[in-house]
Image (cartoon, rainbow, N blue to C red; front, side, top):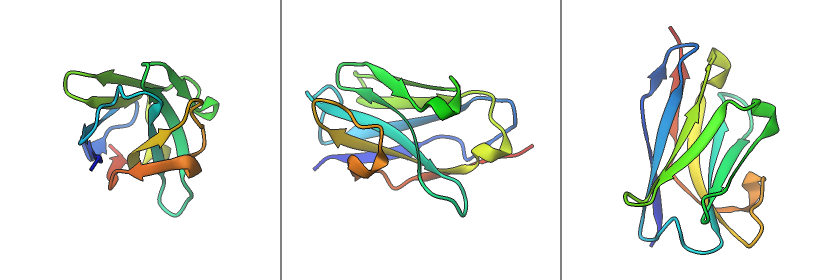
Length: 125
């Protein structure tokens, strides 16, 4: 079955760029009508949708993050990557990658059907 696994540094310094990779196994990230999302959950707070990259390669991001996130993919490795620039301690969170399905991708985490286990990223000097 399809599985997702996040990887990346657990500690990032303020003002630097956070970079996380999601490796997908058991299925291709270019399969029609799937989209691949990043979501985060700060300590003691709710889930926040960050953005997605669709099977076509198109991307869309949460306006609340003000052009800081960027999602790309490496189809040869079946991976997609999140970069979040100019991080502050407020970006400390558990970061998840997840998959959704549908002709029109959703910007809500509620419609994501398959999730990775999550990885904690702490922003601190």
